[in-house]
Image 1 (tube, rainbow, N blue to C red):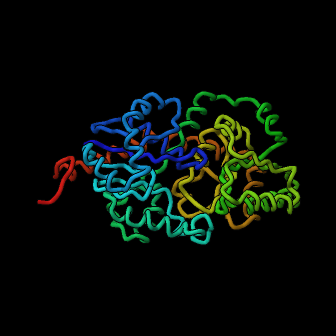
Image 2 (image 1 turned 180 degrees about the vertical axis):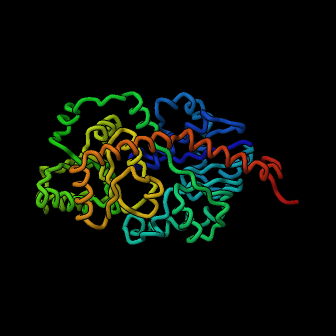
Length: 392
């Protein structure tokens, strides 16, 4: 079969969706298997490892990029048929109707699960998601999700037959695995990085865009408890782009008197993110959304212990690797962080479990599973010819 890999144009500041889009597209092109795999929408930002392979396709796909951006979905679908694409893999959903079979990858259904957060509800966001996702999900040949809980929710909300939904756990981003392999030994105390960002003492790290659901505010209240009740004067380092909630977070920092202990760095170079993982006391990933989040896997691969929201699906995906806390309760967050501080043996155990989990969960493993789905669908797809088709 000819497999079209649809990789929508996403800014790096989007976060996890960007990482998965970029890395999995590259791996699919490199790990061809029995099928012919090619891009059907170009990626304007590629990593060095994939630049040459992807670059050879950019010029050839320039016309198609213009079609995707400026014309109706029917034109895009017609182009796919002319190119005899047998099966399309959507790794990012856009409201593009196609008349070829497709596999759809769903990152989350949080607008259905937690519609009260403004980022999935306000300004027509809920309606926009539903208009794009509902018909695309129900027409998909197969849908892939990152957890059994996501599969359950998909079948509940959209009436999908369970046999058309497959669970493939999201992979650890390759950049973190590569960094861990290149630096097996503990790389000093991070003095240069600390000086660059003026970070003193032990610190918690939270790489998350400033959305309400990322739960920065409750984490700040937990930090205040650690300072005032427990005498544990940890700092907190926050990275990520502002999606509209940063001013509220800054106001809470001021109200709690934590200005000298919280460092908001914005969107920083990837090498500095790696350094922060390496030298943090712990990753404090307390998002209300999940459980298929990538930063905990990145942290684990680099030997950083993880404090993680105890939400549906987390225990199945992460096992004993993280310390789990209730994201609604600052007291519980503070207790989990203090537990890691007071019990270095448990902290080391979490680090060991986390490394094993993260390094098992590779993008190569993910793509091999995709190829199994391609192989499985081939016996169905071969029952009609490639290219344009219409009933007699």
